[in-house]
Length: 171
Image 1: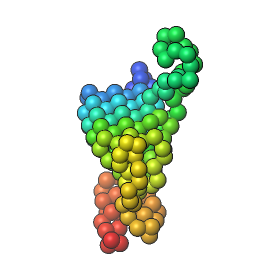
Image 2: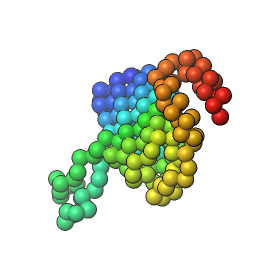
Image 3: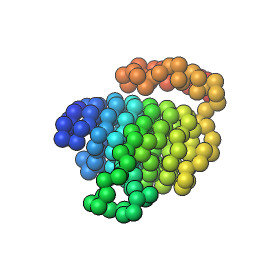
Image 4: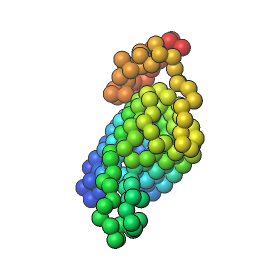
């Protein structure tokens, strides 16, 4: 069980989220109705609403100072502060994916299992591999436009379902 605000790790996690107790979060802002499976590690991440993260997903974190003479943070204070990683609404991230710090993942995107994402991902794009490559979009441009205009991810579940059912006729 987690509280909406976690003062010790500087998190804000909405109380509607379903989070595995063995996942770790630090400097995270997590929106409504998200599902985060086991053994996830999230650092300096903002997540929208209605997202699903499979098990063993790693997002964000410090970048090692490979340009410095020594890699150990014990001997160096030149480590780069991590940029915030942004995950939009209704994003699926498959098991064991790694998302590099500072990446922006658009609404409705799908990240395949075991993928390494080191670049921004467009809305409703499906990416897979290491490094992750775009393979296709989930929907046609006109369907994406209707979904984006509906902003169902900002609604409560009963209203979001109603909107999604009405969008189903566009397929």
